[in-house]
Image (cartoon, rainbow, N blue to C red):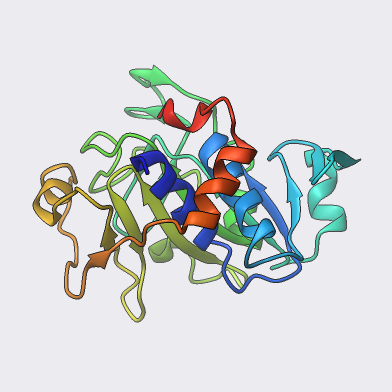
Length: 230
């Protein structure tokens, strides 16, 4: 078992209880997690590659361009797993730029679909390299909407964050980020040392290890072990 295997199963657990929704995982670890969830606990997931293809056990099953997602997928019937160049304690995400928007020090992707995702559907995040540069006190630009900016959003739900160090959620009523679990081999202090704001660590547990069946499925889904390239 590797750290990547633990991250895959943690991403699979993001979809627990979702039932028949469109899963939109972006990146190899979230995609493997969604495939693992559909092969085990959530067989009714409709899986996309995060861009346009609808994927089945035998390959591509359909085509759903992103411009059509909000036309054909009902509010709350999609679970997106996005990346984050920055994320703060309330789950605001930035993928647009670093620095002031008028004169950024680094241009990134732009906000892309993040506002629509977080305003309409359940959203989680995957961060492959946990550091203070990513987990910041305040994001430079709000791309994905966090809880402190979501008062008027009817369908807003930032679910969890999975990083290479642990799993995080946003418990009510304050919806501030909490360290839900650390991965095997990681200490709570290591997470705190690499986070740019205070974390609630009350009740922090240990991220579960994949079962033997899950490990076999992960190997079957990713025989080239692309998951190890975190």
